Image (cartoon, rainbow, N blue to C red; front, side):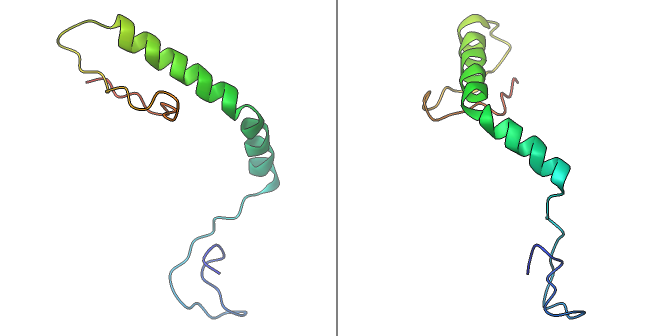
Length: 79
């Protein structure tokens, strides 16, 4: 119900909702991307590790390394 504009029946909305349904193209792209997820996460970990080891400028603040196995570094904020 929430994924369909909170519709209940034909024209009755019971609350605020969104249209979060995927079309076929979005689903196909996500399906392909999910097959590469483990490799993509591994590559992001490698890149984050390289940055943490090689960026030594004292004026730059890097994110702290968390659990290296669990963190996928989808965002690497450099301050």
